[in-house]
Image (cartoon, rainbow, N blue to C red; front, side, top):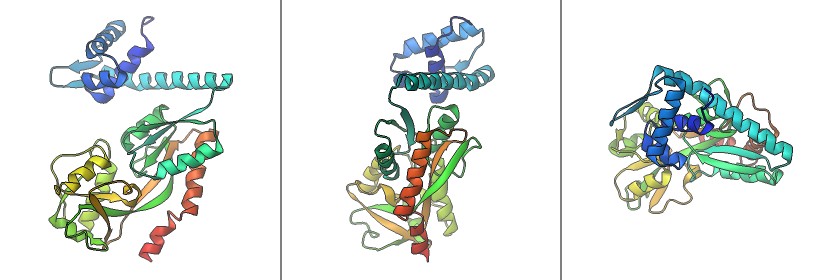
Length: 307
């Protein structure tokens, strides 16, 4: 196995996660034919078939699924070794932070405060859904994440820092636009847009459960989007409504946000990190989230609204 290269392992992980050679090649910034050749060389070197591929689909073989687990660990160890080397040389420390969507304001505020405490800290923000954040935290590819922690695996620690008032985006001129708040049951007569399932299953679950608790199953708008801005564009066109927390409504043109009531709902945001990671910079982000939560009453706001 002496000829296996780190780039081949990285390419294999990319294909395994994307299950599409085109997307994996774009992610790794190489042409698709070169990526395919490197995967074939890796399989020849190992003497096993890692991927089943046809013109219509790509899937991991049992050997590929087993190989993926250790490959992720190898790449994570290499990254950590590089980080140790950079730190020993005095290079600025780096923190890899997962965010769900650039429209949400919680993490930017927290990171701004952490940056003030550690001016030399280099922060890399990666836009990635919560399920993938879990995987990347466990693998060591992310240091900190954000999201609803209900489905977090045992290797991921969490701290609830914000209960975010849930509302609905409506187009200007909609009958809900003149209301101070919209009863959840009123959504039963409207098409609701959900987030892309692979990216935000926990948010979709939260929205559907809220509707069912109000006595109906929502009518789901066909099609999905992968960002809040894309969702707001569909809402502005009058094609659907979109449930969204208050923390991302500052720059969504053409729409109006109205809080939901009966019942009032709050989306739970938690800071996520690898349970075994006790580094100063991860601790600093968690502490900043805790302090900001207290200072801005991000948890107390729920008591004030429902009390």
